[in-house]
Image (cartoon, rainbow, N blue to C red; front, side):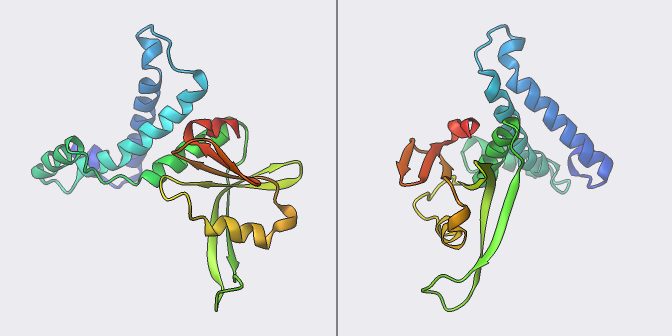
Length: 191
């Protein structure tokens, strides 16, 4: 068991990924297995992605370095809500799954830009790009702090002619400001 959880050999990493995927599929389809049929089919992919993203750090921590105390520490952190999980990564993975399920390619964009008020050029990134009507629709995913989106604003300044709508997928309610649409996470499947 410790080799399964801690080994960095490709065979064990592959096996861990397969186990995470199988567990994700089982959990996503638990309602069908139990005969309830409550979860919308389009949400099953999101559930699998979320389960895999949550299981990765848990399995890594369980593997630890062979320290028997590590499992107790992990359990305590999980029960008290102090498990260190990168929520941004989990949310981005869920959005990536929704985009892929809708047939979109997963395109990330990093660019350099020098805003008028800046002394030097800086690097910025856009989480996802989709195309609608031969124009770009940048998508930024925010697990918190959605009011600040410099990379979005600078992207629009730099590529103004090529940008159609802009989307921020976040954990709040649906809202619209000009050509910027704030989508709740559960609506990512509508993109």
